[in-house]
Length: 322
Image 1 (cartoon, rainbow, N blue to C red):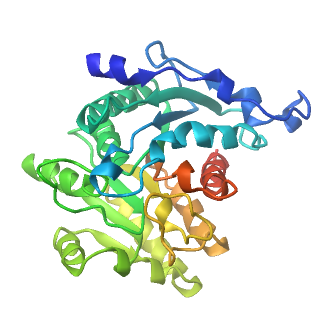
Image 2: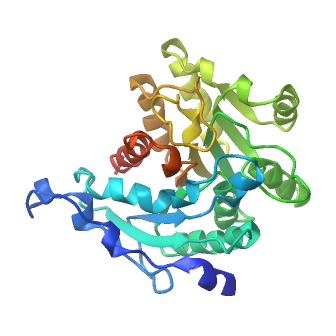
């Protein structure tokens, strides 16, 4: 708990401001309804979607990627702030602040993040985390883990993130390798569905290893109209075989024209068109979805806020489910 206290930062209310078109419900924007809450004092958060930033890209640095994602949580909040209010009045939007990193200490940041997720879940909230690098997955999963329940992970990503540790250190590309090993050590298996994977972004050895470990893979090239129904079936079957579902989105899954501001840009990524949003909505509708995050948004390389606006729309669409 001391680690959490050191790395936790209360929400900054100054980030939430924007246009005011009126005070009646049909004219409200997110900055007018968000509730900034200190996780040290949180109690009941039933029917709440709780935003939590993970201001860390140490895993990206260790992975020799482009640094800058640690600034994404507050950068994205500024875009979210001015969104029009369309979600149900029965849902409460909460900002719970950030988990920071102490220098190069990724491991402590993971520990603090897991505690923060546990706090949000214990209070009855739905954690919606904003990275940060995709090292967010390890700490996020640890916060969701319960030995009596199985957690399945759907990863929307160009990369499998299942590479072995380098010099016994975690990085942004090792989370699923670590989780697989941790679960194996306690007699469990990793339930992992990867969507959007690009062959050009993963070695043959890594793809073979993932398949040998039971990872289900849907390649980016499969995300075409005549495959949509089959992919939906695969998603539904995957969701039904686990107790809880955790959805993680790496922004580098998208084509560079739509998401230039990422740590590892993908010229051949997927296009966020109507087919994509049909699949996204289907994932959002899964009844056992208990948590999600968005990772690898990198403000340093964004153009005209394209990547931030795409990430904001992913969150906007999620809240429409309520």
